[in-house]
Image (cartoon, rainbow over all chains, first blue to last red; front, top):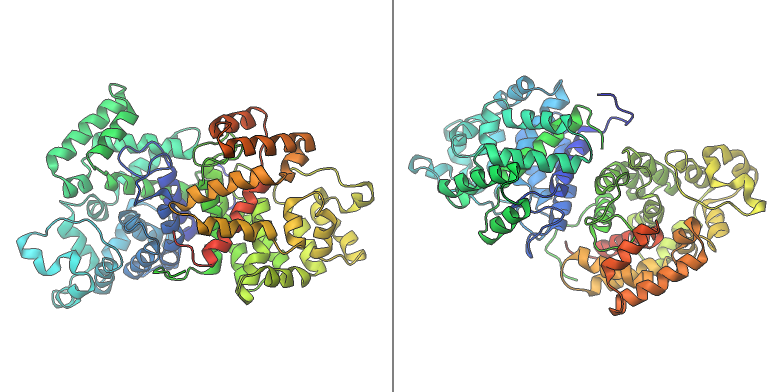
Length: 283
Length: 283
């Protein structure tokens, strides 16, 4: 893709991806520029993206990925809405590190994941000290590694010599972002291609990609907040909305009424926007 | 005002002010998160705010104000929508420099303006090389200093030893941002007080302040793009919208139909948001 735009620095590209994600509308069930909640508003996401930049700059300088993530979460949390972009930043952190080292591909992203250390895992846990994140009860054998323990889990992590990749492996079957980490970020790269192939406003293309993802994959944040049955229902209705059998804004209204936020799907869009921008997509 | 939020770095505070301004809706006649144009979209303003950061960081490190401004405009222009935040950045630049040196007040902002140099003036002119800005024909005795000459005006500026304050003085009667520069930024500080005094979402308070300003002051960008009669008409209708005699969204529709963009009023809001954030307003 030809471009007349100057190359944007990596950290700013990631910041712009966060901003474009929340601006993309409609994204049924999530905050976007047409829909917000009284206590979780569009402006909280703007402040979250501004605050995340310092951490993204650590990633853009090559990492370490755990420190970059924790710093970005600390900065993101400097607003009164609570958790705005935790999952998106978790997805972006290794992608930004990968892009700082080489061409951004599933293989180079895998290399970053494989190189994560025990220190990265500790910083990941500390990320949970900065903001409340909705998570499931851990499996019985993972209680000592419950992410809600935050930095207090450090002795266990160090005793077991767990890297951040190890931590992600243990969550990949329950968490869509961890699954991306462990498998070369397939949804992220696929969605980036879809967004790049489109025409018109970037935020329109990202909204279309959001609905496609919602219609094709179970949102694991919905499973966490509700249950698998709810996530299956959302996927089915998103497919109806995509085909025109259901009105997209009616789907949005229903998800808001039922307090269903397909947040993982939004995180994937943020990651995909970063990949697309990094590959030359113009705004 | 008490705050539980960490103090945001100055440059990021200014970046957040740019983002909150464009997110504030409704702002009749301007791009906001509910209204955009096919060739000037919300996403262009997001990218503009991301790109402006490097220049804002120069200002946050104490200047020079002209260099900070030019760098921010160059970064802002790295998107395909054209001029998004030229006036807002011109307003913010001295305010950020002032805040980097001392408490941010009309007096400290005046000090920054009074200290501007010929080099600052040259950088200001170079700002116009980066992006097309709608401006009026200059008075006959100012042809050599037509801002549309951009950096080519440098010999004239140096021959006449004009500082950036001198340049602003010559435009203050025709340009609302230059008028702010020359008079202690009265509208900016007054509007900051109004926004801080409000309750609820920051972007709602900023939209209210926008309508108040539009109802009270002539928008000089409207005068430039159209004429004084048009600006008077906009002011009158904004006053009707404020009082409820006219529907705000009908005013927005009318301004869009007539291609009227009260851009200077939006710039004032961006400056006011920066002052309010700097004085502890939480998001």
